[in-house]
Image 1 (spheres, rainbow, N blue to C red):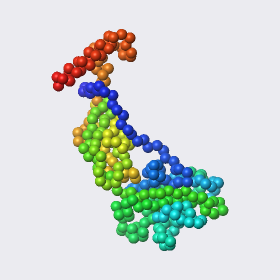
Image 2 (image 1 turned 90 degrees about the horizontal axis):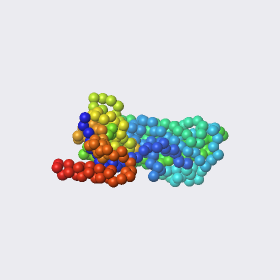
Image 3 (image 1 turned 45 degrees about the vertical axis):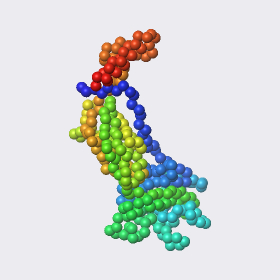
Amino acid sequence: MRRALILVAAVAVPVLVLAAISAPAGKVIETTNFDATTGVSYISLAECRGGSVPLEWNLTGVTFTARGQYRIFASSRDPATRTGADLGFCDETAATTPVVVYAGSVGSAPATTAVQDLGVSGSDIVKAVLPPSATAPGTDPCTSTNETTSLWICVHWIDASSTRAGVASGKFILQVQAPGDPTNVTASAGDRAIEARWDASTGGAAVDHYVATATPVGGGTPISSGETNATSVRIGGLQNDVQYNITVTAFSKAGNPSNAVAASNNPVSPLPVEDFWDWYKLQGGQEAGGCASGSAGVFALAGVAALLAMRRRRK
């Protein structure tokens, strides 16, 4: 059985863990593609082409009762720029004055709680906020022509007396491009793990994160790393002495994936690891470990260190 000799503890690679996202007060968000730093949500290529956009909203600033209805609108105009009684509410239909606005209804739901979720068709959203010429039959609105289009989604609460009584809103960006592919992907074996390394993607949409995946040769369930914005990551939970093909994929803010790029040294097999203490014991070391009360353990370990140094010089 092959063994890897590791004398230095591995350094943990920063990994971004996607936690459950909840809509901030007064906001509408896309729960899987929401940037909490900027407060902006993203609509992906798959969503633009008809996939469901998972919305969550958090109605605040009103005395909410679980009666009435939520009506959902998408608009090309920021509701914060409207005036009078419309301030903060999205346009519900297209308008030509004081500016040209594209807008429309994209969904509704019974008002059961102040914080509520609903999946809405991405194609309905895009059709509401783009000019009719961009969504005409035979025209694909989900191309680079409309990349980074800004839009707003509002949830209007219509109370039991049919009055527009409350609102939550959020800014969204249409992002249909993927990042460029990672390059120079390689992989190295660890104990029940493989570390993937690569060079950063260039071109296309900005990279939000990378994911590395290990797929057993001959078939089996692929195992993926966590998300990372570094250029290396550890894939854990693997089986030693099993061959895996390693790939790395870059993702945009909207979750659009690059091509999955294979490691140049595929396949790779995780290997049992011997650390310094394991190696010492295999060479006949008698110390029990822990804090030695005398000098014998120190001298023994010093001897092992010297032996290892001699082995390195002979190579």
